Image (cartoon, rainbow, N blue to C red; front, top):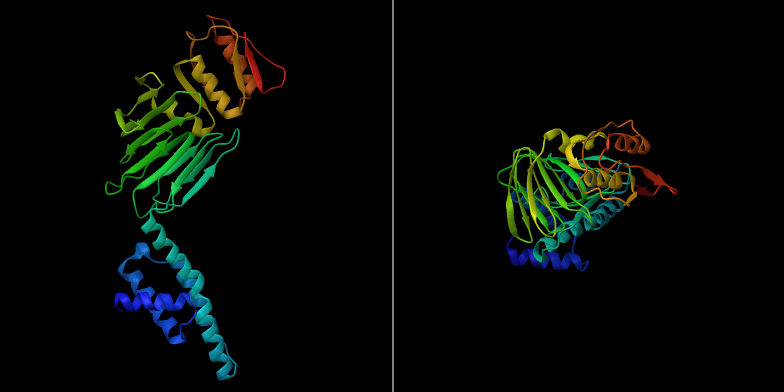
Length: 311
C-alpha cells in the first residue's frame, strides 16, 4: 500500500467509517508491517488473540448466513480496536520520545531477584526500587536504581547496559557489580567481575575492574580494593564485610531493617570484619558488634526498636 493510502485508511478507520473489506486490508497491512519491522509490531500473543477471536466468529456453526456475516463484520471492526490502539501508542511514543518504565520495589528485610528481558539478573536489597525501560529489548538497555542492587549483566556489545542511580551513571558491557545510592549516604559502586565505567553529572570518575570499588561523597571519590564475596553476600541474606568502617556496617543494618542509629561517641576510627548469617536477628548482630568492638567499646540501647543509641 502507498503511504498516503495507508494514512487515509487509518484516518477512515479511526473515524469508524471503514468497510469490512477495508478493515481486513488494514489487518493484512499490519501483518506485513510485522514481517518487515518486528520491533514496531504488535506482540505475538496479542496478534494471536485477535486472530483467534476473529476465527471464532467466522467458524461459528448453525448460524444463518446473513446473521453470521454481520457477526463477523462486527468482530472485524471491533476486535482490532485494542490491538491497533496499542500499535498506534507505540508509534506515537517513539516519535515523541516518551518512554514507559516498569517499576519493582522491595520492602524492609526483603531481598528480591529480578530477571530482565535480556536475561540479565538483578538482586534488589531491602527498601530499594528498580525501574527499566519498556523498550528494553529494542533500544539501549537502561535501568534506574534507588537503594542497593547487584547486577549480573548479560553481555551484548551491540546494546550497552546503562544504570542510573541519582547523579551516577554506570556503563556496562557484561559484568557483575553492585551499586548503592541512598539519600544521606555515600554512593558506592563495586565490581565483582568484568569492568564498568562510572560517571557523575556526565563527568567520568573512572573505570573499575574486578574487586575494585568507588565510594563517592560530595567532596571526593575514593578508589579502594574489595572482594567479590563482600560485594554480593547480601543477595543471600548474609553480610560479609572485611576491614570496613563501623559506619558502613550500621548503614547496612539501617537500610535492611528500617532503623536509625544515633551515636553519642566517636565511631569514625572503628573498623570491623563482619560475618552475619541469614539466621541471625538484629539483636544478635548488635551483640556481636558490641563484643568485637574495642576502641571504643560500644553498647546499643533502644526504647522503640526503631531508634538505637550507641554509647
